[in-house]
Image (cartoon, rainbow, N blue to C red; front, side, top):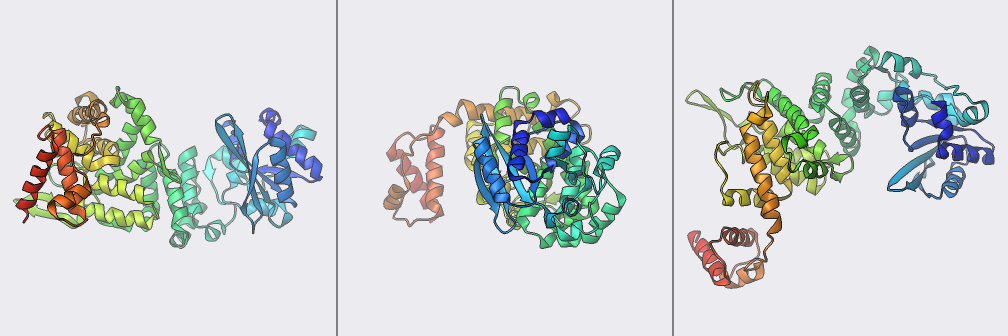
Length: 482
């Protein structure tokens, strides 16, 4: 570990700056934690200094030929960004709380994040001499998450989510006193900005085995606090077509979505690489398509409790997809998600039955394939994987051999169609919106969009090829509704 620190050019340059300014610089934070945990080190560092933070950060930036800016003027937090080939490295400089390193460390969240190394010890004494006032080194050995102080949660309740994230990420347990403090402070979580809650929650969803993380959050009472709508999902019998009650089915859907996302090349050999890149797309801060799909998988059936009915001794959930889309739109707004992210959530929820309504042994018509991608647009692939996971979570032992999952044939057929035909065909419409309004004497509105879609579909199906035929089909359609 010492050799890794000494050989780091960035840490050495920070030490040079400390000599220039005649004051100690301390290395703290996640990089140090990861070094103690698994002896790996990235080039994103957190440094603490007693004074002249701006000057020290500025001099470090010049020495490393990086860019320098202020993160928080009031608290004197500064960041230097250094570009190394295709990667950007962030080096943060902050003032030591009250000028005392021990006070600073004990004010942090967890003991494993509350260790510091003095750069002069590393480069002048050739030793680590870790400053560890909260027992972080001991907790590394015992593999536990422990608060650095009894007031850590009350000062920042978002740390409750961080406790779960670190426990899941490092396969640690949360020690008993910390668990008790979570329960005491849980209600304060909703006093925090939803942007911060969302960020931590989606970091948890990005970890492997997301269903286990969700179960733990549920057991702690955190999940139902953030998403109270899930309370109605528990204990709902889904009838003879399902082996699991609704809440368990939802968690199983998360599990199988996770499984498919981790092994896309096994499930979709021809297009696995494309799908891997697709689900790595970042939609907004801390939300990528993969962890968003996990979120959707959890909530795709959220409309079922309010639509459950019995007919002829059979359970039905009529319109639960449409009701669920509206509920999930409200949840997305609560989490302060952007317009695009919200649209993906609501569209995938609304259409999650689209593929499941087809008999697995039937080949889809060209029109059905076209309509699928036309209607779902930017949510198409998300909904395809959701459909697989949803189906896999319906019956016990239904996934023992993925080669015997009929829905995979439909999904692969659709993906093939997308690449072979749909993605290559972007014809100019035979009639545009202005022309349709002029021909039919219509005003702008949703009807114009519907007529444009009707023309595009008819053209793709080969039913029309000319402008005159397009006029005829929209005129006929308009007469039906007059």
